[in-house]
Amino acid sequence: MSFRIGQGFDVHRLVEGRKCILCGIEIPHRRGLLGHSDADAAVHALMDAILGAAAAGDIGQLFPDKDPEWKGADSMELLAKVLAHPQVAPYRVVNADITIIAQEPKIAPHREAMQERLANALDCEAVSVKATTTEKLGFTGRGEGIAASAVVLLEKR
Image (cartoon, rainbow, N blue to C red; front, side, top):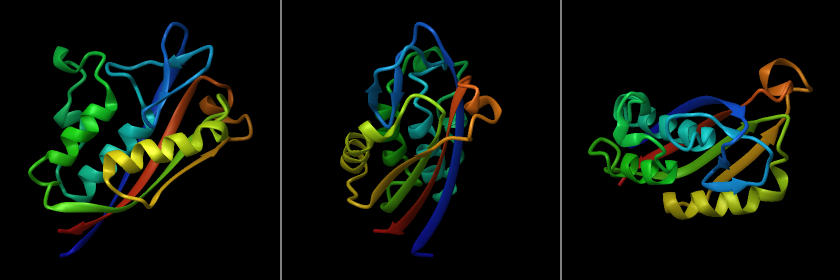
């Protein structure tokens, strides 16, 4: 099979005293995402989409949150490890489509930087980052956290 499609999803709580990092970009905000690593929900969803497409498990298997090695890890560095994974390396990313679900912070002012950062990391020009709110419904609407969804297409090299 020369093409593979993968989907990923991640959620992190917004808390005081943490940086808000999405798509490898620090977003100025009064709260940040809580997690064992830097909690970049968008990159976590992307990594799970890539791993899923390659039938290589998920980020919880590769980078368990109980393992102190990954405490405070930069998700962009974890993404590089995912791309080098033996089951992923035979593929190239054709395109990636990420949706960030958040009432706050506003994503639009950072969208281009996010797309550029991911495009460089993936060696792929077809990277889309979108954002939506939930019209103040649910945990994202109440500003309690941020969710992200990602879809990727991989092609055998």
